[in-house]
Length: 173
Image (cartoon, rainbow, N blue to C red; front, side):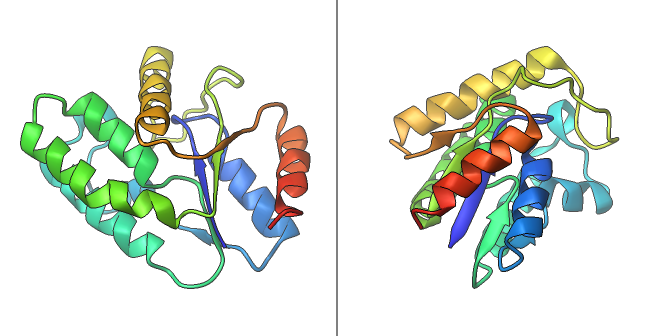
């Protein structure tokens, strides 16, 4: 089973992925491509380059090709949202991202959407703490979910409440 947790930066994706892994150790947590990019010296968010985005696309596909059960605290849906938002003027990159990422959206068995605005964005040195940017990405993610008719479950509440809701969902899988 492949679980994709989606949402803008700072909404609690990593926390939820770690909680799922703790309670269901058979779900391996996929590394987050953006954090790996940062470790490789790439700039992220508003300062990212086309080259960084191409690296991220390739890395995301590599990560999501992992066999077995996994939970990802970011996936191709999020990546496409960031690319469409930050690089709308780079039509070749956007077209490439759409062509490369959208066919993979069907590979997720469960898509969990975490909306923005529930928590203060923590400064972890990787993500931006700009609330407007978070809201813009959140809107873009919702647009992608609608445009590509991606089935998802919106999960809200405290981290503990979110985990309870996910456990209820997992009973059906």
